[in-house]
Image (cartoon, rainbow, N blue to C red; front, top):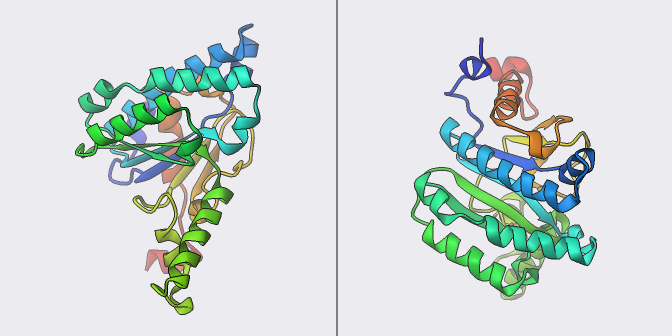
Length: 245
């Protein structure tokens, strides 16, 4: 039976987060420069976004450029920024009813990239299908530190009391406050770590690691990850008996 026919479409994960790893190694394997791998990876983003939208996923968050990635060679960073600028296809978003959002320190991005991203966010704001979220210049520890600053400011201004600071308060002040925590986190490329990505939000996410490099990750690979997710029991600290009852 084809994978897609095995999937229960009443239990599609509402939010999928992906660490898109392996572009550089894929390019090396094919005797190409790293930039070629990033270009192929950008093509995969479009394929996977459209497939996730068709399957009924509500939020797709992609780890596109980490805070640590700024430390890469300057020419590679510049090439990635150009690729990001060229890859934002607003027409595709509108055609597929996709809403577009960004999380991360946008002030670090080149001005023309910021302008392009902001325009796309505004123009797709009324779309009601999948919300594609790019984590750009993003670091989970940075995000949590920024949330702490916001909460401290609220306390200093006496807008909240110390007793108001709980997990819900912290979640409200994170960059991801507009969406639910990921149900499923996928990492491609064979590495088994979170790499400073959505550390708070993934406290109870199901984790799926595969050896496939991101440029080779396709619709069938996404379906396989979702099927694996559906075969797991999500207990959130409870027992199996409590979940059944």
